[in-house]
Length: 110
Image 1: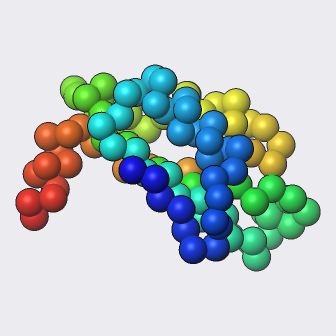
Image 2: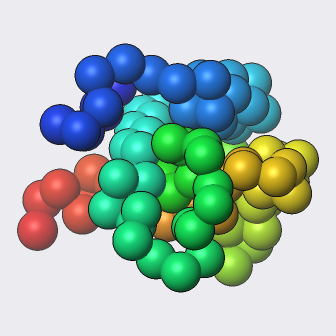
């Protein structure tokens, strides 16, 4: 599933990279990536930053999360995107939802 916010009409290179890395490593059943950078332009930490791809909300549904705690799931995603987070003008903030297909099914029934 592709998610593009109303402020951005096309997927940028950082979002493409996020999608590629996660797809390759986690083979998700569902992947949603939302660029929320436009909501954070006014933050002090963003002064002087030219990138329009710094803040993302990502939902990943993958069998590879089975048996992992929430912390371990998040650490795995952060490790996958380490280079993108360390790069100047790279990912500044990453909001994650990490679930197994079974957990997602239960959540959708609520």
